[in-house]
Length: 246
Image (cartoon, rainbow, N blue to C red; front, side, top):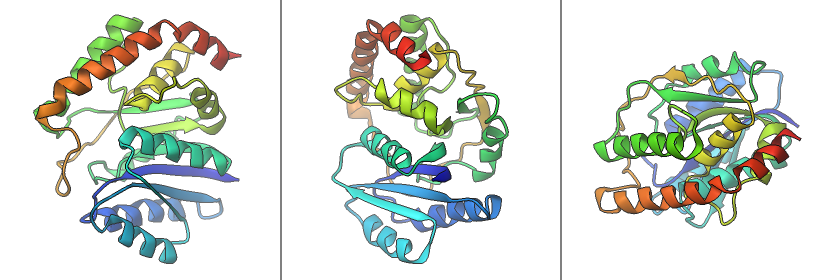
């Protein structure tokens, strides 16, 4: 049993993965010295030296769990990370990214509210990303508001804290086939089932290393696919929400 597992997908992050791993595992050790905690890094088929570095780190860092998989995309890596956290019996699951764009100290803002909600989100108050990604965020925010009649500041943010038992319920209701951005669906189901998401403002930094996975040429492809998936899920949402509340 683990008090807390941090889920972190990684793809081609050789320039910052060591720094990020040491940062988060150190926080776990210092904040929870007497509890079982782990950082779960899902290496999503990286083509650079990310795997080599992670395999070496796992030999040195006692609270690091590395899972290597074939490239399945960010969403698939997140889902597999959640499944691993649930397999370990994690009481709480926190998800973040490996690109070193978040300030780890902001974790406390979510952790301090863990007894007030089973699903807590941050939101990037000032987002330092390319215009392409900013557009996608605005597009999704408007789409969710239109289709589901609910407003979520940053539904796909990789900075979220979820109670393990509640995450299990959400994962059981995740649509099949697996959506492109599963975190959006988890956020919508959590909000619709009555959880207070809080939308806590957090710091977002410029990306200093690596490359973004969504570039201009497939912007519309991502938006259209997400729109179709969200629209299709709307027809089944009530059924899934009832199952989560049960």
